[in-house]
Amino acid sequence: MVLDGPDGETLAVWDTTEAAPVPLPGDFGDPKEAVLTADGACVLGLRDDNGSEMGHVWAAPAGAGAGAVDLTPGLPPYTLRGIDVGRYGSRAVITAVADDGFTLWLVDSGGNEQPRRLFTSRNEAWNGLISATGELACIDTTEHNPGFRRFAVTVVDTGTGRVVASLSDGPEAPVRAVRFSPVAGDGRLLAATERTGYARPCVWNPADGTRIDADAPGLDGDLVPLDWSDDASRVLLVHVDAGVHQVMELDLATGGLSRIEHPPGAFFEPDVAAAHLYSWASHYAADGRIRLLHQRFDQPLTVLHVDQRTGEARPGWQPRDVGPGTAVVSRTVRSADGTAVQLWVGRPPGADRPTPLVLYLHGGPQMATVDRYNPEAQAWLASGTAYAALNYRGSVTFGRAFREGFFGTVGAREVEDIEAAVGWLVAEGIADKENVFVTGPSYGGFLSLLAVGRLPDLFAGAFAFVPMADWVSAHEDMNPALRTACRSFFRASLEEDPGRYVRASPISYVGQVRSPVWIRHATHDTRTPPSQAHSYALALERAGGDVVLDWFSGGHETSSRDMAIGDQQRMMDLVQSALRGERWSRSRVRPPDPDPDSAPDRDPACRDH
Image (cartoon, rainbow, N blue to C red; front, side, top):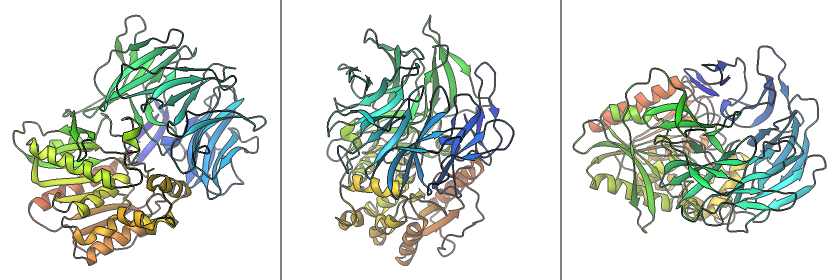
């Protein structure tokens, strides 16, 4: 488990027969990417330079004591895009991205064997997984369709490195691996396919090519596979309809789909650019029960267990001392070309007229804002400011066409969606037209800066966290995984069509910005490098803009609860300044200091690409 503490995120182990998780002392790298070995003795995680996301995977004891081991001592620093451990034994796989490409490595979690290269490619390849007993491994690859983020699944023999089989539905329909069967000796793989244009579960046997597909023609929207039961007879799914979650279960013997009764809210959160497919997800417990991880905008994570006899979801673990909150609702608005886009909307308690509003744009872009607990949203609502969160084109769980809707025109379709959302919020009497603010991390920060440049009359201010402000100058400073992703998103490399990168860059529009801008950026960010954020702020300042650039020590994913609180207060103070007609800037833009006084802070939803 990942615990959120005042100084940052830490790891804990939860014995589900006990009441509370037990914190793990020590350094395990990025807690969100760490995994526990099958025997519970070690934690594997990426250690980097101050949040740079470039480093090595280490194995560290999960209990007291020293003895951490670098599992890839001879490799150059790499970005992690997959990590998985076998259910039995000590084998694990990592997906490492460096200047020489994307590589699947087999490692021994005890550090007793040298890492072995199982697969490598210059084209995008992510999400390496290993079978229960370690004989097979797989990786999502684009060898069949270079330059396009539409994956196939390649399975290799870990003993020989031989490719056993590949699962592909052709160049138009991507396939992504979810998990090998938990049964020893069963090499079947649970995957997500998109033959229908929407995610559907598939169980595939690489040994003979047989597959079970649940096309679910009666359901609109994605049907996302999360897990399968310990006996590999059932699959846990979530149907996502316009952003709203409904948990379901697939019986593999009969092909029957059944709904699981549960309260409204979110039950998983997708995360594309990370070591795991999901930031958190519901799953099966060891006793066969469904363990629901449940959140809402106004309710922190709660664990529910589904009674196998009655089907009732009962609390298994609940947060303490939860204050009152305000629920949000899901709404659908139409963009300029008629495309339906989903919007989460919350109004301050008792509001009966338009109020100032903050529009949140998630990072990614191939992520999604789900109905999970959001203390930032609750702070805005409690202060009398309305809140909305937009799942713009590029967001996941809305089908392939929507997810790829920004390809080749980075920023353009998203800005149309933003304009449509603001127009709807004003027309519905929710937002005060003169006092709409836009914010977001990473790609959401990029869109915030782009929106105030492309739609200068729409916003009263922007708050951009670790944003991409200049795709051109950032290109050489990005980590290798990002450079490859850019080619897929832009449908061309920077050398092939620099104009696309220029048109998408907020720095190209600083002369049109009329609203104040606050940028919060990291000194060691390898996704959205600090130099390009500094260049944007200088350009906006020289153009006469009102811009504040605040630095923090860390990387793209650095986090701290204390600084999250500080940043929230900073934004709320800036909103009040804007309402009073005051400038935000009090000093000149400065370059990054290697050790700025500000402490680390990052929203966990900021992952980019």
